[in-house]
Image 1 (spheres, rainbow, N blue to C red):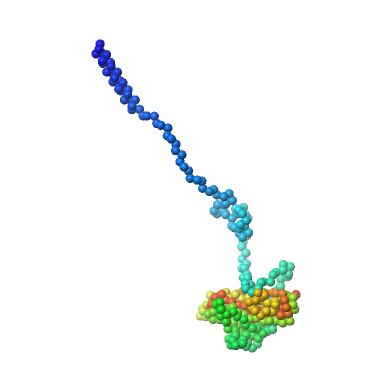
Image 2: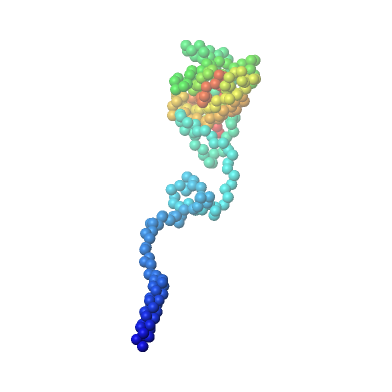
Length: 302
């Protein structure tokens, strides 16, 4: 009996030992993980409501600049073709352009009427201007020029139809001036007497220019690689003989290379004496740089 009890006790101990081993092999319960809040970056600035995406932005013009948000271009009507007219160069130094009256009838250029100029076609015996033997000018016309600032005094002489008929617009002569390998700012003027004070005047004249980089590049005396000759005409309605006076009213510039073109300007006479001017100022030096003027007219408009 005691041995049986001992065997039963041993068996119970073995069973208890196996039970403990089985329980120890079971996985431990997993603990609930602690969620750590990850710090987030500050939000970036959002697109302004009025802004548009690339490719949709409206063109900003002078009218819309600084006037607040620009409306998307998608809602706009398609723009028409751009104007092909070339803008006129402003008169620049020496007076303002005469203002246009919208009710005034357009005047032809040249206008008809009695020509108040003396020797308008630059004929007659050309004589030197004072002590300058190279400044040969037509009667009743007088040269002017600016020295310095890259400007040199040009030479003046008659262009003769018997030698170069294409350089004379009418008659036997035209006034020519030039400066080889140099720039100049120069022209001619004439003061006209007995002008009805307060009358509206028109001054017109034909101009031509030749500008050639090197003489051997210009067959037939044509312009090759030319400078812009920047020619224009003016009236001083006060009769002053200073070409740089701010009272001179100038036309727009023109560039009549190898052809005759007419230029016109209008002004209201402020006295019984007015002065008319022709001007040329090439924007770069060339070997041949010649200016021609012919057949001017100063008339009182109706």
